[in-house]
Length: 339
Image (cartoon, rainbow, N blue to C red; front, side, top):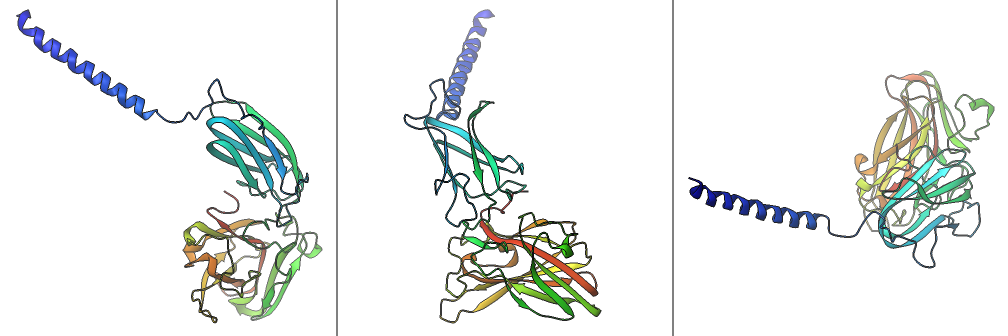
């Protein structure tokens, strides 16, 4: 009986051996490629170190300038996963970048992953390597309050801008006040200062009888008369966002009627389409609103030639409404501040 069992046993051993070899080869293939964690031989490349400076060479970096940025660089002797973390020492704001490469080459103009960098403050820049808990390199630096003029879609913060600080206003029904307001203006103390830290634009409407709409203002690209008013933005509207801060100063039933104008012909007299979205101001205090342009029907963000903000009511006709707006900017790929 044992003689007849020996061949099945040998066959089973052979199959297990082949299967084991096959698994070993697949395992090796899965993990082939560049190492992402530093090896024991990891080091910065000869002549390189973790370096933080600015385009102008000044410290602090003047991020209210359209040409300024903080530059962060390093180079390694092997490919690794790395993280650069920028932290505001006063605001507590954070911005992180990650990569998988043998070098770091970043240009940062003040964006954050949440709470914004909107004050002049010292910052700490850390370099963190994958598979290591401690900070590998750190560097102190300083910034002024950013205005994001470096980004291609910046329109206005009502302080320093490529545009006039006094937008074009258009009237409507009732009695309406439209004006730029500084954060310390006594009449608007209940609003609280703009998160951007400077002036904002206020629309305040009233009427002796209930109405739907009051008035509005325009904020247009500086070169809106040209055929490509916003060069630098992505052509895909699903990857471009319009961002702005807004609040209603506690006035219920207030609504912003946003209009974005897009030309879509190449003649000297382009055909203009107006894309609209209504934003009900249902929250308390300031909030960053970020809208994907594809959601309002924009076809090509590079052809935007104007924007406007109107004040209205959204539930019922009312005798008053209010909206406050600041930091109007378009951004590529993601909102200005990640939430």
